Length: 287
Image (cartoon, rainbow, N blue to C red; front, side, top):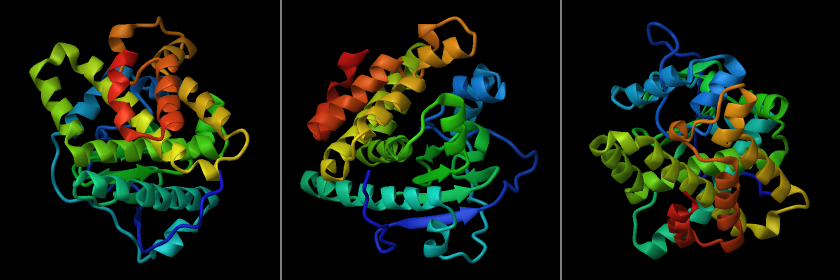
């Protein structure tokens, strides 16, 4: 995908090292693209424990404890090719979504992109790179250890620049949900109906997939041959059913938190082909 070079005037970027919280690794905020079963498949983590960490981290508060080390946004965005891609994507996502919020009369502010290595702290708690990129609604930040992209390609067979842009665009989709109030409404519904928490989470994740497609669809002139296939491969690779099979576990629909491979592919395709964010409200039909 041929994206224009990032514009530091319309993005916020930060960087930091390992977590300085006692005890090292902890839970992560809501909105992770890499679900608990991915952690199980690649790193051997207990998926139920990981889900518990995610829920627990949402209750944590306090200031983020990240040291930027004096690096400028330009330096952070050019520290490696993956970082540059991420900044290019963030700049494009801001340029795409800001006018849509303006048309809807909703206040807009782009998320801050945080690069880290190994582990980090966020407004949603501490996290290690094992859980992959995530969005924290408490501080409206997208957190990425860019080494994840090598894992994604080598372990899941989801390579290519569009697959990586899909990761960014999905997490950005959670930012859209935070700004519009969708995320808060779903969290409230989950608390009131704990038995349907996973089903509601699936809807939110599929809508974020659809929003990722909307961004791509509105930048169709930048799409290159093979990009669509890369996106579909990535969406398929991270479906709950596919991950459970690859980890040697029985497929358990009641444990799904992100949707099946077919659902994730369909959601991404819906957004990409329509380029219309209102179409993502149809996600409920993909259940």
